[in-house]
Image 1 (cartoon, rainbow, N blue to C red):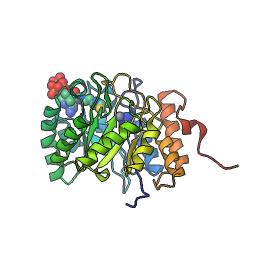
Image 2: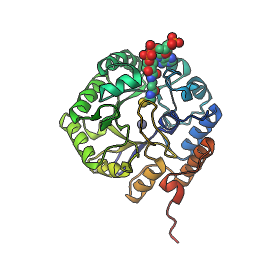
Image 3: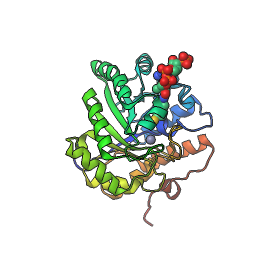
Length: 301
Ligand code: COA
Ligand code: ZN
């Protein structure tokens, strides 16, 4: 990858939909994933093998994987919280996984009913197994900028959990602003602390929520620090039932527009992406609300 190439890690079908209360059919999810691949996205987080009691919306994870029309060159990671989730993912034909913990104890407890240390212990056999099978893997560090229960989160806590995840052998880390409280100074602080600890931009993705309108500013700050992988959700949906107050993820269409104007390569066709964004809004029965979803790309008159 050159310095002008940016990876977009699409989380719409997972983070985007997991907190939606209207029932979404497996077919609508599969159509969404197909439209995302049509638009040129090459990493699409497809679903979650978590407890269906914790996340009812994604209880059809097996059916989603079974119905997936896999495109060449596209990776379809799935979320796995424990050994049981790994068994399910293997049986369903997954080949890329994401484990997830957080930089704050209170959120980890609410979200996965474990301490941070317990979560690392739970992931060890999962990542060992993934490596044995040659799967790609990622570790999420949620609440890296703020916790809905504990408040401010210090960068030392982020570095500590990031190091433990990397020791397990994950291929990359996604550093999450789960409730959307960060501003560029926070990005510089956290990414800077990771770098000082020897965890450079090539191992990192940034995962911003746009709760307070700072997501794109945070992307710009991260780009300046050399980050080249960003999570985003087409249609701007997203949130977590265990993260009260969180609003949608950074919208993929907003990210794509910014990258385009910055002259960076991202491989996504904006018009095709807006088709996927409209599919999401029709599925959820509410109007498109993202900036670029409403305005479209800029067609010079
Ligand atoms: N898939 C399906 N079912 C699972 C499961 C998995 N990966 N892991 C556990 N379960 C089931 C158990 O079989 C058990 O079922 P039962 O009540 O019918 O006996 C029940 O869930 C409780 O299992 P337990 O091991 O005691 O888990 P827990 O109650 O401590 O919950 C998690 C732990 C991790 C399974 C649960 O908190 C979870 O799935 N969290 C995910 C939250 C999430 O996805 N958040 C959004 C992403 S940031
Ligand atoms: Zn998220």
